[in-house]
View 1 (cartoon, rainbow over the protein chains, first blue to last red):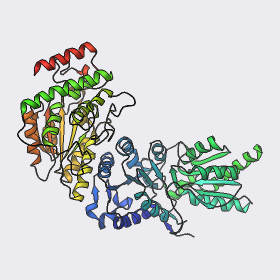
View 2 (cartoon, helix red, strand yellow):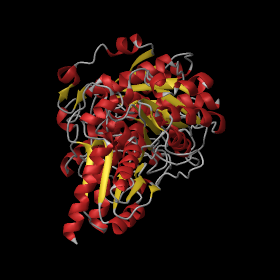
View 3 (tube, each protein chain N blue to C red):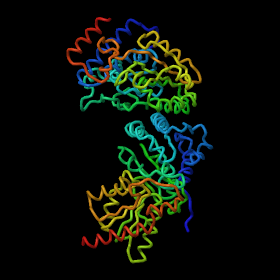
View 4 (tube, chains in turn cyan, red):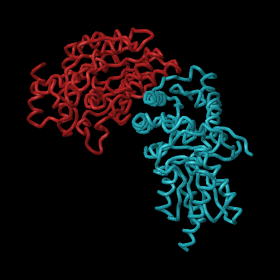
Length: 316
Length: 277
């Protein structure tokens, strides 16, 4: 069993390291720095941490001002609140001004669990993806989250980092390659491709193992950067495998799956299935229990893979 | 740049010239916001000819004071002021709002030198001002940061979030200016949603409040001088103004919020302004 650790912890460690290496990195939070793990940076660098109260719109605007003055601000809160409250600020103050602001959403997806629907961010990738100049990164584990945090500081322009609250398996090693915008193929295979981000990468890998038992070779792509999307990796996978399943802890309306479909519909259409939240709100419960209830488990990905394999056979 | 004794007569004459230019720009564009542009003219004159430390030949001078226009629809006035100072050619003013102009209908950051922030979705400038001030504090850079908001604009909740942030962090570099011109798009502010008592509100939020007649240049300049001397807290100049100031048929008439004058109306307005000198 792999070690379990929440991706938000990886962010907290990355931010702390940036404090040492990047004097212009600062952080802001709307009274959720403990939850988002920015509190480790706050304790070490109190002068470079700004509390703005429970006021996400002002936080994003303040972060934009800091960025225009040459700082690299990380603005942290729950995914739902930092993105849901501040669309207009992200659009005008951050993206339109190309402000070098890093927006950090902890508690993405269903991982906030017991808190229920109001805090469960299931739509923010859709909304942020529509903003010109926005970059979106959803790390698959805590190790990758730390790398993504450090990489985002050196990546000019707006970045959204989506993190999770619940401990999830460590899948990658510190030495594994990571570059914003470049998808990682975690497992080779030519029968079907499973494309996932965040926690669902683990489920995709487990689905691939199950499929392998039946002789199906599934390629698994960790699409940690949802925007800008790695078109060559997607097109190559579609050409090689002819069948695609996407998996995300997010609504299927406009998220990772839609982003993949936009590329493939234009360049190399193949049968696709979308594993994700089916246009509904979240609910209270244990995160692991909710992933089952919302059909986001490895077996759901396996079932979707069998669907696309059947479609692929018909098409031949 | 000079901070010598201001020649009030010359500045009043300048304000008239700016008003004439603003109206010509909007008339030529065929659209725009004359009312809220005319109401802020003396405030910009007081800033750009007295209070602001700036240098048009070096618009990116790191130690320049900053002026952030939050009520973006007033940008014709800002563009005119910047062009009068030589930030960009005056001829370009006539391209306002017409493709492919640098003079956007609402400001785009650095589309022309001197435009420090984008604006047009109301309520956002003051948060950015605070961000600049926090960064400057870390960098030990001493400069003033002015942010002009409208009175209708303070209905936006973000303005008050930012007001709390500036107070909490004791951002003495920040000076807000409210162009309290009494009207918003659909009528008097007090009828759309009353914001008074405005001075008391800012005071309750921990700000140093200076209330003035925003068309009296001596008062405007004195207000900026007073604000600059305040320590440990942000300042706000509540400038009581008249929307459409200087043109009788536009003054306090909500119809002139977002409509361009037709040729005959422009002619009348320009004559009136000239006669008032």
